[in-house]
Length: 385
Image 1 (spheres, rainbow, N blue to C red):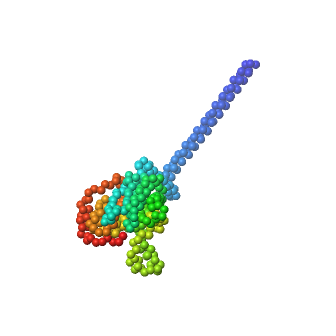
Image 2: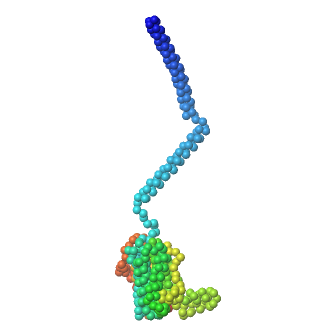
Image 3: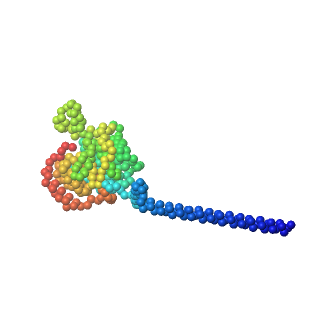
């Protein structure tokens, strides 16, 4: 019985092995057939792809061109962006430079003489050029009124108050704020000097010029003048506060004749000055005047513009600031007016490069020639101030 069982087991194992072998053989045959079909399909697909590439449809050709153009344009835009980014990176790594036309420095010309008067009642001051980048440059001229007593003391009080105030200004926000603050300070200094009830006992004109960066502004009270010289032309920036201007307004309003405006002997009298108490007029621009290298700005008392012509002023200002001051001094001196008023002038010459305080050198040859030419001007009485 055991032997029979063993025979059965052996027979069953043989049959199982045979069935498994048959299954493996059939599976292998099917796999071979499938692989053959895949190979044939791949061959056909390869031939199709080859034919497509050799002779693509027209629609595909147009699409390819468009896609290629888009890709090229995208690449060009990316290249431009990279170039600009590289330039910005290089620019950022370099120290910033002042823009072209920026005023980086200033040269100063100074003119201050007593003339034929018994006392020098003009006074002036200029701030230190080393302060230009932090505070700007300030020039102030005060012309004490010769017809009143102590005009020299009033002009000195004005200049001292203005210069001290400029040094104490805490980062002025605008030209206008700085100049108005200094004007108030000058007014208070004169009020203290004159005391209660002392108004109009004496007085002085006041002009201030303030240069910071490429902006120039000013304050004017009285009949001193502020001028801009540019490219051979001279422009007066302010208007004198004199009685003649009020007469002109009366003529416009039909209250008097136009001829009487220019024949009234009181026409040159001041209508606004420091020392009169409350000011009647004050001049300043609505916004700073844009200046550039080569420009010259001149502050002057009436002793200068009443003694020289516009042509002479323009001729002198065609030179450097220091030379212009020397030329004007020579012209006025050689005219030898018997009643020549005290005269004072300050010249700012705008420069493209930084400079230290300019120390006047001996007059060059062309300056000396200008002085000699002035000798030929006949001596006459100076016009009425």
